[in-house]
Length: 139
Image 1 (cartoon, rainbow, N blue to C red):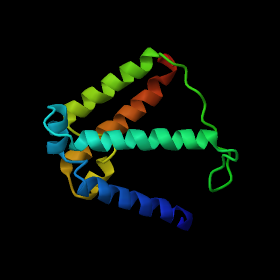
Image 2: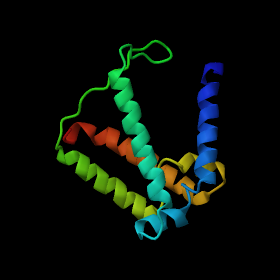
Image 3: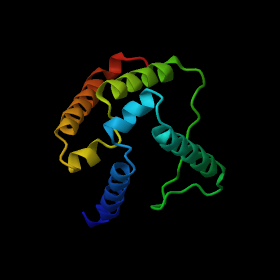
């Protein structure tokens, strides 16, 4: 169990940053969807840029290994798949309806938010439902 302690600590720090940066704030999310503030767009754009740059760096490294020695393999995705667009729309609709991104759910549960518990229950149910129906869905 002690080997998982660094992951727990990184998760706690990440949750703290989400709460303090107001990335988990319902009001900030609503401002974003109403195009009233750049706050959340700035966070999203910086996350996209960080992910893009780090993925490209990992792909260009000669020895692509994780800290535990496993080889890092990033497969190419086929372009133009309609499932990406459909998934993005479903994700965006859910995010807009509940006003909460799945990322900070655990941080909000840690702050004592009862609404976040409902969202977490829905996310877990949706994950279970996807697992049950996966074989019938196009991939």
